[in-house]
View 1 (spheres, rainbow, N blue to C red):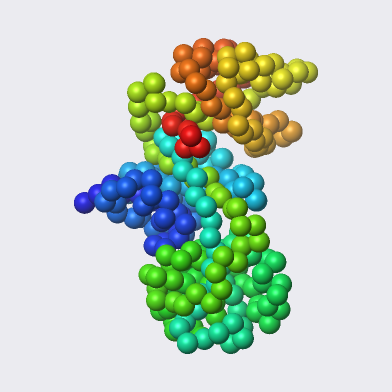
View 2 (cartoon, rainbow, N blue to C red):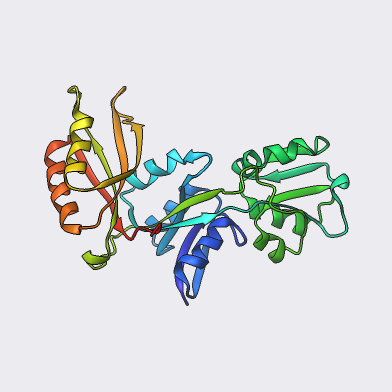
Length: 275
């Protein structure tokens, strides 16, 4: 039995493709129809690791997932960038003129909006997952209904692709993070990226001072995202991703940031997948 990996979605989803590509070995998929469910599988030890989408090159950050990682004390141990390909698929023997509905995840529908405008006879219906919609069509023998999903879903659920690569922006990628409840220690010389969360005080220039420390320690800020601190109205925490060439510089920065911020949390140290 391979490693148990929790994914949002089912077999044939983008999360499934990322799990296959990242782990490159036998794995047992733990299918979850929500990110909250994915986290629960990790916390209850029903899964060893999880694959979680965190940002898209078109739609931006998936903000609730930042809060899920932080509030459940999950550790980011890796990342993977996956190019998104959307295909329109339905039961075999149909054509586009037969379709009455297209069902998919809201993000997939949004990313294919320009194509769908050319098919005004097809009603758009939001669903929980791309591949799950494809499976429903197969299991229910649903004629006149299409799914927008990856090619893997068409292969798994024996559907016909009626239109390929229908995403509006062809260079469409999603960053996925690999999470678990315990940190995985890799050799320091292999670590060149980290994710942090911190809260600054209300003094003028506090955030700028923190960013200057990162710069002075030769850290490259690749992402910054603010989220409200729920318990304190109008106060914000900052989630940042940084890359670096020297792990020693990062250790120095961690020490300084722990002193300078009101609250500091290391979310993960891992390899930069963009290199």
